[in-house]
Image (cartoon, rainbow, N blue to C red):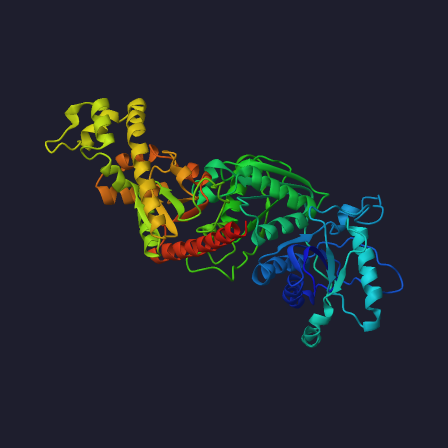
Length: 561
């Protein structure tokens, strides 16, 4: 069957039997849908009967909260490529609908627009009679079109034939239905978090918060100071991007809610001063933070918030260096070695050798990565070594440096005293620029010669190992920029141990260089040597294999054009 970009899955099974069905239903849906799968819950919906069914309000119950967690947890396990979104437009507390006014046409006075237009509607509805399949599919189309904006003639698929094996298990486990336990809901609900690369655990938190909130949902999103201790903080999406994704997600999940998103620059934010808040949603990991919020609220003369705790979602695919829970830090670590941004136009360069510009701050492990790439077959161009060569007697740079900075820099063997030269430019930007204007172009000439030689020898990849790659403007000689990063505190430890300098000197050295964030902004690929050497090696191997694929595709493109 053809694949669809976006689908709506209408779940009709009773809440007490649905948990068993979720994984196989999602697995079946993932064979048909490629990108986005919206989930619409209507337990007990009958399709294909005498009357065309209409959407109705579903009361929030504890089982519904459990189903939502299970949906996102199973989705992460069996269809991680899909953006699954559980829609709650038709879920509303009884108190919210019994104010004496009736809502015309139930939860959908008009069809709700979704950010991704559905290409197909799927359902787990059990078909009792195969001869009714057309009638059921037409009924499903009509029902879905009443709820959401869909194109006419939306294809519909009954997943139930693929779920028949479950029937016997369900029948064996079937127990008398008990009355569903109501879920306590609140006027105003608050949560806080980073919400980087919106994933299943975020969606669970947001969906359950929407389930609990009747009027307003307040979200504090970590910014600036609150990001400092995040793992691979340089790869955290910009605040504006995270907010935009939250707004889009929540507008679809429960459009009736008043959503407020504010920056979080300390652990408390507005949660300790907003008198209207009634509930804060936490996980077992953040419960202590919720208790700290309540302590502050009481100090501020405000009532404590109800702490509604949700379970963390386990990550079935986590590696030994990643957290067991689904987390943004694990997702960021999986980006290491991958292509984050496509290469710029390099039509002025020869297709081969493919030149990687590798850079990173002092202590970042840049040169160790360059050596690993060399072991895989790349030609390593050591720009630090070339920097020493351009100072040798009888070179153009040697003569120009002496003319600009004085012959008192000469050692007895006619070489330049680099330490004395350093003292002349230290702390003086103009004098430092005068020096780099002499030296950097000479190094670039030597680099180009080595690349030309590599081309003649038929080498496919050159790695330009250069601490000042970006500052010197050498990216014009490269096809891609790769950046190695580690946290500043780790860099300080490495520099002091390696070079025998003080912590203050190490910090000064780092602060005189481009920051990790500035370098990552210009990177196509990011790597980190923060963990054990074998973890670094896996990153490098991944980066190398993906690079080979890009080179192959590029070569094929050049041949075909």
